[in-house]
Length: 274
Image (cartoon, rainbow, N blue to C red; front, side):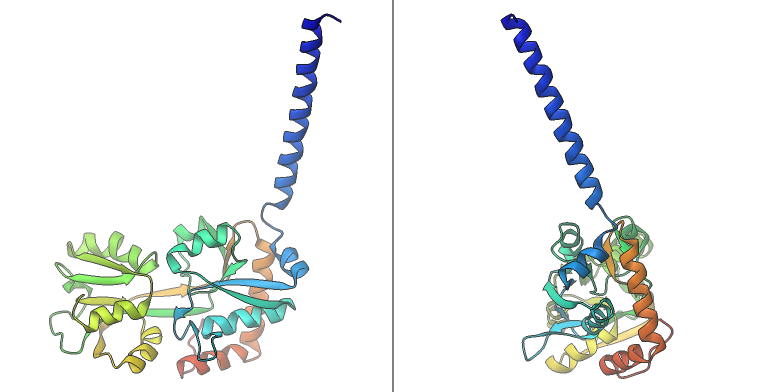
């Protein structure tokens, strides 16, 4: 065989090897894309749950340095239904989607509002709570009685939340320009509101009540609810089997009264239809 023919033959062999490796890699990755979360969690024996950990009474670090709250209790029931242990992973809300996509945790149970845009990035369970969002101002504020009074004001909101999207994309075009200040946690926004560094914020009183009581903030909710949001468990796209199992567990705890007990424990009242 001439040197030239030998080189041609060698290149052809290399091409076949590269092609084979490429096909094997593609097949392997395809087999692990979506749809296997349920089996993965059961094999691991642990369900890793992404939560903010700063959103009392939904999810927060209690006096014993443990994750606690409404979302946490719901996640514990899901883990119990799956017959696995649960592990909570703290994550600022603005990085929650990225944390889910990179596998930092298996699912999110952190007041993740179900929206059409988010459905393009994540797969949601049926809603497990409905929250009414209201305008929050200082007790002595008489200028702002609804979102219609936001024009020209400084308004605080959680970074990356559905409320931020609402302010930017829906409300501002309707009522006129106002300055949006974003926060990674609720308590900092309320401190700024109480100190007069912002004029108002929007949130739900379930979330604000314990923070107001603990810090003595002189703030109040005004007007009718701005909107109602429904939160659900979120996982990566393609994991329908996992979500089907979560939905069954949620239905079971609502049917046997466990859900009502959890709701009463954290909000002091019976739930409406969720």
